[in-house]
Amino acid sequence: MFHAHTLQLGILASGSGSNAQAMLDAVAAGRLDARIKLVLTNCPNAGVLQRAKDANIPALCVDHTAFATREAFDAALAGTLHEYGVDTVALAGFMRMLTPGFLDAFPGRVLNIHPALLPAFPGGHGASDAFSYGVRLAGCTVHFVDAVMDHGPVIIQAAVPVEDHDTAKDLQKRILACEHRIYPQALQWLAEGRLTLHGRRVRLAPGTRLAPVVMENALICPPLEM
Ligand code: GRF
Image (cartoon, rainbow, N blue to C red; front, side, top):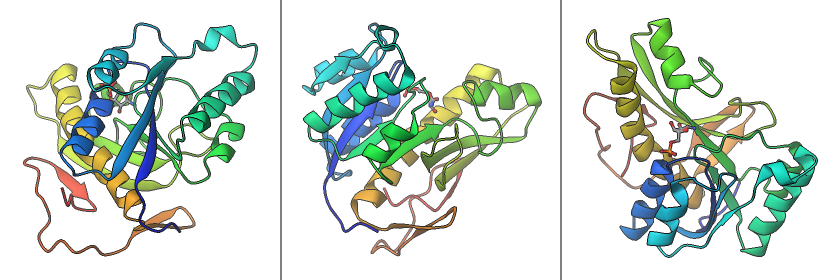
C-alpha cells in the first residue's frame, strides 16, 4: 500500500492527551518514525495543548462551535493539517465525528483508538460501558477510520481481564496503559509500510524482530514489537 516513510503526523485530541503523550514519547525515544507536525484540538481547555507546548510542538484549537456545519469545520481542520504538512492523522480521544470530506483528504491515513474490543461497545464510553455490562475481558482497539463511528478495519487489539474487585476506574487505567503501547505500535507499522488492507482485514507484513514484546496481563494481537 505504502512504502516505509517517516509519518508526517497530525494528532487530533479533545482531552487530556495521554495517548498523544505516548506518541510524543515514542518519537523522542526513537521507537516511532514520525514527525509530529501539529496537535489540533476542538477544546480550548484540553490538557493536550500543554503537553504539545512542553514538547515544542505546534498546537492549535479550532472551536467547532464557530462553524455552521460539520463539513465546514472538517474542511478547516483538513486545510490546517495540510498547511502544516501532515500526511497521517491520529485521532486520540477526539470527540467529533469526521465527515467523508475529511477522510478523503487523507485516504487510508486516519487512525483512531477506542477503549473497547470493537465491535463491542462503540461510542463515547467504551470502557465504562464494557464494565457496566460485566464483561470478563475488556480492552482497546486501534483501527483505520471510515465514515461510521468506531467501525473501520482493525489494526491491533489488546485484551485485559476484569477482576472481581475492579472499579470502572481501575479498568479504565488498565486499558489506557495498553492504549499507550498499541497506538504508537500501530503507527510504527504504518510508517514501516507493513499494513495492507484486504476488504475489512488488515494484514501485517512480517518484520525483522524475532521475539515479540510481552506486556504483563494483556493479550495483544498482533504481538507488540516495541
Ligand atoms: C482514550 O480512552 C481513548 O481510547 C478514547 O479517548 C480517551 C483519550 O484519552 N478515544 P487521552 O486524552 O489520550 O488521555
